[in-house]
Image (tube, rainbow, N blue to C red; front, side, top):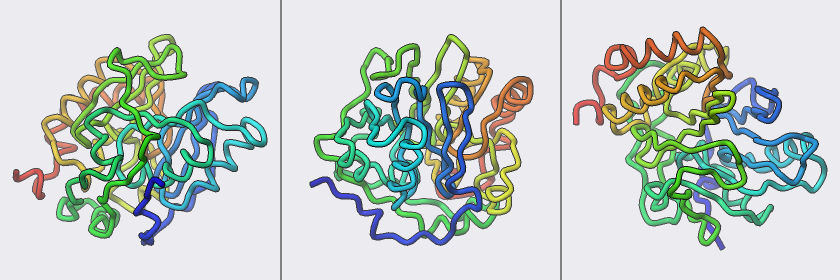
Length: 280
């Protein structure tokens, strides 16, 4: 049976907005699970044709299942689960959800060692500063999970299973196999943690959810040069709406101006001045 070590870990904090959700565009619904977002892609009038993006925090499977049933109906299940990457706050309930729904899970090939029990992530870096969440990151798990036969590599042609019109882009930096999802028709972007729309290092900002474009959560980012290039790749897409792993959705001029500024000034505004992976 697949193993999820995160159920052995008690988290030191929760977000006041946990459990709340809202429709970003007609076929994408955002659910906040403590400090992270998951996304349901699909419309309520097609309850057999939806996909879950990411899998939240440990012990959040019941919350996610209940939210899915409120949107798509009792007994619903997605066609697939797609992971932007395998950090603990994005895969916390994925083993339980994959087993409950009996559905495939897809991720970038570079993430598979962390999803099959083969390799642990680089440890978090609380020395980057920026606030209480960064300080508490020393307690965040970096153990791999084991999805067994449920997990599969994303298609090499950049299509997304059961998500017509969407494509995936390799956006490494925050994680070696991090991906973001983009739909050209309406320029909708699911960014994962390539960039976020809240200052994730600050507990106050996480609670208040003040919207602003920020670089990836610094305490879990091991490759800052790659992270900068990924932000520039996403900024070049000129998204109309962006849905990140942390923070509320942003759209229009505020999004584009913020993302362009981050792309230009990344090394000043996003890269920490010091830290384990900054110094390396």
